[in-house]
Length: 287
Image 1: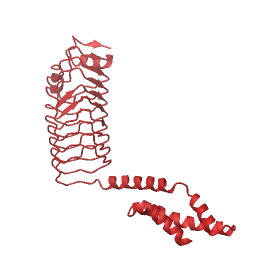
Image 2: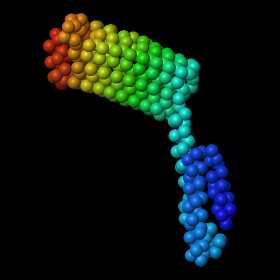
Image 3: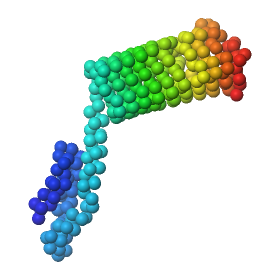
Image 4: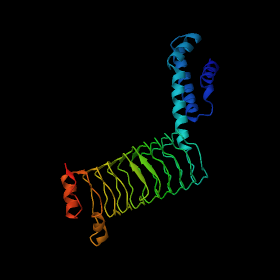
């Protein structure tokens, strides 16, 4: 009868040979079923009755094995997502899931990450020129010190994403809600932002010279020590936005006077801070 139990398990698990967690489940079940069978025999059950009752005691074995196998394979795929120091130019990663994936120091130029879920992944120090991240989930991603020239981030999910010290000339962000994103010490003079919401974004010490933020929304954003000459906030909404320069830098305060705030709406504290720096607020609405 032990052979019959073994054959039953072999058949139930046949489709999942090589999946380690499933093999471990199989070994545990084999031991438990043998013990259960012996208990039923000791209670006076005949072999066939004891066998049927033993099998019934484990419920829907096929569903259990399927769930364990799917979980195991999902975890294995995540563990194997280490493509660091690889030449992956023009690769198709559209729609992939790669949580905590490693793509550091790789060539990813022209690659397609459209609608990919890259939560927690790192692309640090890679060449990602012309890559497409439209609709991608980049929550908690490390995108520092990257060449992201002409990359697109239309409708992407950017939460706690770190772009600090990256090259974003020609990169486009359209229809994006940037939440707690870091863009410190970053050259953004030729980056395109359209219809975006900036919530908790840090632009400290970045170059935004000539940038146009017209009609967009800024909440809890830092522009401290940033290059702001000739920046436009026409029709924008600013709430709890910080503009602080170095005490020794007159250049920052001169740049503040060149910013266009025509038609902008801002809270009283932001208004007062900018007024103290002699910004032109004649066409601003205080909210």
